Length: 368
Image (cartoon, rainbow, N blue to C red):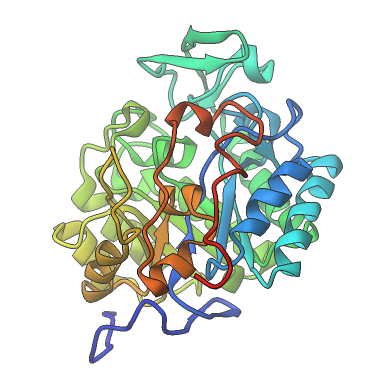
């Protein structure tokens, strides 16, 4: 089913997304910021950060792990313990008080993890190590060979995602985004380079999409399909991920999920000229969120407005922006008025903890 709009929607027009009516079409993309406690509990500083950005049409909160073995890096958030749920409730309460709405991204790192961080050997579809070093509490370390997931591991992990979604609702989130992108566990199952299995979860595309479909279905059954989004990243090689047959993977995945009634499909690094993106738009019957490719060395003066408009013209319904929201707590106001945007001051500060480079980005003075 194609997007049947007769004209390109405007970025500041309302739009339906699952059970929500968003006031405009610019949402905050999930951004790992490493400001949680070592136990994965969100902090009051995080509540301040997100509340500052509540003018986003929707905040998709940073990746949170559904179980201990899914942890990627130090001080990332999780959503599998009561303390983590309580920490996230402080965040959602703060955002709601400012008029905002939040989904939570649920992410399992798979082979992107380390025993020095989680205390556990990472698990993955196949025992193929990440071919690069990884950040741990003791600094960068060589990656380890993950343990190949058994059939029982797969069943347990599917159940963990569903439980994490239930925890997210208990923590005050409107819904969740299942992370099947950027070289993490679900993406590892999709890709030939990381999935060498010979059972029902490996080999042909129909088998390699099975785990992603099972996770999405289990999460939808737990909290309602209309409160579940799925994030994908066709062609993206982050974390040394090599799909191999991108043109076959995503039409099959979209076909398997098209009639499930999910809130949205979220395409990262979206290129409106990419035939795979165009095929996804053609086949996906629901809301399509697109995350544009912005320059790596700076945020465009318009905050990404023109990039978003090009994706809307290509059929996207909602635009997700990351770094522009990171550096501009009042990004929507700046976009509406044409005011200049803040640049990311120091990329190092994105992941080191503390308020500097996190909650100290200035907003426009009142009346400007």
